[in-house]
Image (cartoon, rainbow, N blue to C red; front, side, top):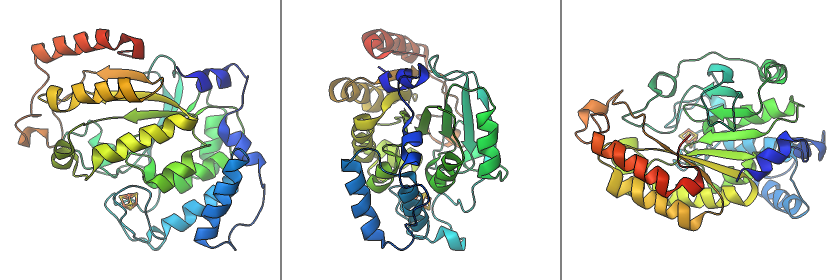
Length: 317
Ligand code: SF4
């Protein structure tokens, strides 16, 4: 569990992004076609960790026809067009040393991006994700703050970090500390985006919300949620460590919580799982009968039972 992360902290190995920066420093990939960039990336992957430069070029191209997440809006965000996440330029809501993350991660230099590709009616962070509140900070300045910040890792979150990938890559280009990189996300990324993150992110700190596709569509307005998120967890564990968070929703124990935990236990190799019970009915939750309340005593007892059952995966924080 968290083998890669621990080895970086002890200095036995480097975080991926430092290896990626050593490759092809300064090479100009702007002359490549989009398809040739993917062919070259695949070639580099066979020889080890692909270069950061090629991923920065790919991310810039995707920005012109945005498919960072499975909403696949296809908008040109460079020209200010807005997709479902409504993100154009990157804004940061806050960044600080977070002491409230999983015990292995703290203190964690956490960067909260404004905006999200989901529209969860119960969003626990809606000022950031739905109201897009934040300020612009240059990637050079953020890299500098991270460098001198004293965190054990860098934790990219939001909202969701997915719409902000070109910015994240630019910060990495300006960073040099041997800090593990954590992708803290709803994991609704496309396969293309997962390929970009593979060999850059050391840990995937995922938010696995639902098992039932209809629950996901009704409460977060996303299609094919479970199949996308399952696929991405399987991709993520090939190169990184996995910490999976599941916030138990009232009334969703049978349709979502239990089958989702069973799948994690049987299909993933060595994830660390955090079953969370701090749900609050905020934002638009009160318009929905099932989630417009706090967890019941019975549901909290069931969570305690599940934490014991899955204690070999970590269970709680
Ligand atoms: S990141 Fe935003 S614009 Fe891009 S595909 Fe996802 S929702 Fe659409």
